Amino acid sequence: MRPRHTNKVLCMSVQQSSKSKVSVTPLDLESAKEPPLNTYKQKEPYTATILSVERLVGPKAPGETCHIVIDHGGNVPYWEGQSFGVIPPGENPKKPGAPHNVRLYSIASTRYGDNFDGRTGSLCVRRAVYYDPVTGKEDPSKNGVCSNFLCNAKPGDKIQLTGPSGKIMLLPEEDPNATHIMIATGTGVAPFRGYLRRMFMEDVPNYRFGGLAWLFLGVANSDSLLYDEEFTSYLKQYPDNFRYDKALSREQKNKSGGKMYVQDKIEEYSDEIFKLLDSGAHIYFCGLKGMMPGIQDTLKRVAEQRGESWEQKLSQLKKNKQWHVEVY
Image 1 (cartoon, rainbow, N blue to C red):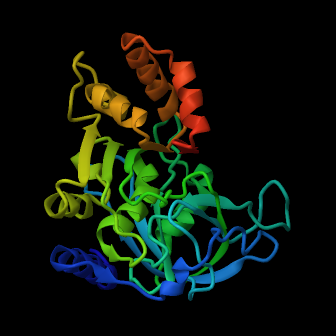
Image 2 (image 1 turned 90 degrees about the horizontal axis):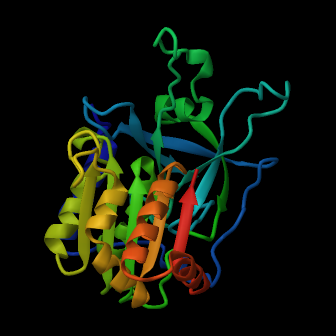
């Protein structure tokens, strides 16, 4: 059962955006020249309030992923692509009497939040559950402290926030007609949901996106897709500006008959991707750090097939600030 509040906001936002873009406030969130950084720190976090917690995945998804909307009252402004730190309640088992360490989560909303009023920020969190390798049973004592606190939270619960932090995943907006290739596994889709809402859902007077946004999302199966309705609605409304490719590892096969991962999708479209990168496209990677070796191997192999050196190409992409990676 979805909380009615979030459901209403989400549906309303998609319906509105199909007619016209949604107006956002306060527009002075656009006026800063630099992103806000570390407004709140571990020693003095901001006490925010949970507005809603919604399960995002279907019954056949392995594990549970939740969308959590946090009311910060407009006091912790951030930019798309940044992270919040969360300090879960309780004491640090390694330092008795001290609070838990900060856990970082990529923000899954634009600076205006899901209610378009600049007062909330959203997180996309997968519940970390530990299963004993011998018995196969869940061991709650080893479950992720913060992800379970967040997924179990109720509207009205208080939450200690730090941040915002991070500059590597900020959306470069100098050229509103640029190409942005986004590669996500699982909850790594969070910052890209923020980018895409800014590009396609919100009416931001000083950012009129006219380029190409191309999202590759890797998850286990159809029930594990995150924000799929939202992304599919952009495809219908902006077919010339948005592409959306899914790699469902437990449902699709790659060309060798193995499981379909995001790197297989990248390989499938490698000619186009390399041409876009040569023309200045930005490429972003977000998700578990285990995603990167397979992706790097694929890009290296494709580069070599094209007679290029991947090491040289990668150093050029980094030098040109086209390469953005946030893995955890």
